[in-house]
Image (cartoon, rainbow, N blue to C red; front, side, top):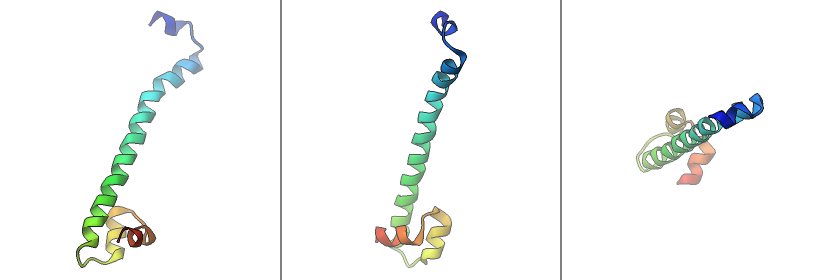
Length: 67
């Protein structure tokens, strides 16, 4: 921690944000993958694309590509 005291405060702030940015990116990627898996399962059932869009947040075009 002593070496951090010698750094520019802006550099320290950026360093401390890195773990959170990686966590946020991973979380968003995981949510996107879960939505895709859910949509694929729903597409195998007689479910309207509007309903899939509503529950997954995926566009109708994206859902059509998954078929």
